[in-house]
Image (cartoon, rainbow, N blue to C red):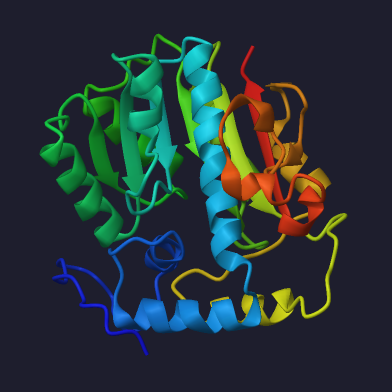
Length: 282
C-alpha cells in the first residue's frame, strides 16, 4: 500500500469509491488523488501493466491535437472533461504557440475544478482562462455558462476538446445527439478533437486482461464503454476530417511532436486500443 500523503479534501469530493479523473492523475504521476484512487490504480496496474503508458499516450494525443489547432490559428478552446491539471494542459500548449490563447475548462469532478482554478491562480491566468464545474450531458448549460465567462467569442472559431471522455458515457445515453448539439453551437471554422477506446482491430498479447480492467472500472465513479470505429467516426458526421482521418492515437500526427510514450507503440499502435480524430466545421 502506498504511503503517499493525501491532499486536503475539497468540499463535495466523494471518497466512497475511486474517481476516474483522480485515478488518471495517479497514472500520470500526479498528486491530486487519495488512497482509494491509488489502491484502485494499483489493481488496474496489476491486471494491465501498460496502463500508465496508455494514459501518457492519451495525454500526448491531446497535446498534438491542441498544438495542431493552435498552428491553424485557433486561439480559443472549450475543453470538456479536462480532468486534473498535469503536465501539458491545453492553455499551456496553445499559449506556447499563440500567446493570446484562451481556454474554458469544464469538469464534473470537484477536485479537477479546484486544482484547475489553483493552477490558473498561481500562474496569474484566472480571468484570461476559466474553469467550470458541469456535466457534459447538458450541452445547453455548459455552452451558456462558458460564454458567460467572457473568455470565448462565439463569433470566432473554437476548438472543442472531448479527449478521454466519451467512453465514460454509456451505450444507453444519447451520446451522438449530445455531441451534435455541441457542434451545432460552434461557429463555422471551429474544430472538434476527440478520442475513444475500441476493440476494433486491436492486437492482443499474452496476459492482456482488458476485460478484467473494464470490470474493475464498474466500481468507480464512471465505468467505461467501448465503441466501434464506425460508432466513433459517426461523432464527426458533417465535419471535414483532418488527415489522416480516424486514426490510432499513438500515431496520429506523431511526426509533429515529441511523444515518447506514443513512440513505444509506433510499430503496433493498435495495441493501445485508442482512436483519435479531428474534424473541422465548414
